[in-house]
Figure 1 (cartoon, rainbow, N blue to C red):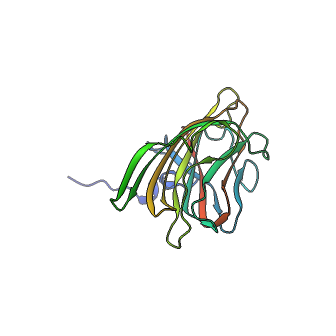
Figure 2 (cartoon, rainbow, N blue to C red):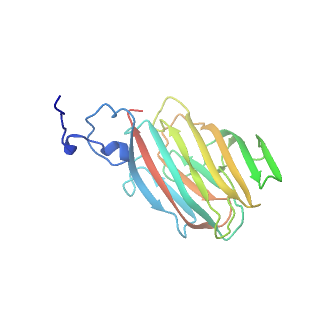
Figure 3 (cartoon, one colour):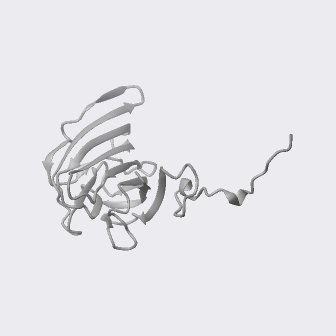
Length: 212
């Protein structure tokens, strides 16, 4: 039986590798589009504002993902790495309620898993902690935050975060958040910052999920 051969250029795989493009295949229902890549080096805050510097946070996508790659604080050891939102592009103070729990492992001498009442939020307008990385030369913070339908003018805005960091006490730490921004206005910007000090280096990427 003869083999049928397909030309390589007959396949459109662009969306599955986070490039923008036209989808043509059966895999087109869950596609990740890279919107913006920001180098956080030497920054006090990192802002993703809709309509500014090619950032899109509107009804183009129903789900947005932020990914944190090798985030390193300076000069402080163990500041909280936080997230906040705004509905007007400038005042990052939306009330949020968030649960916070974590798993920690310190070279087998100390292992813990549990809810952290010191880092949860109840209608708080400050920055929600996603972890507290150390500032050693080999220490950093990684993970992602997923925000659902931020442009809705009907519902509150749920989000979840899953992050890992080499914590300031030389502890491997996996941190989970789940909660919501308590506003029915459209969220048009997200800001990330440390509770003290600046970003020494790191990259934050924003993606939109098509048809989510």
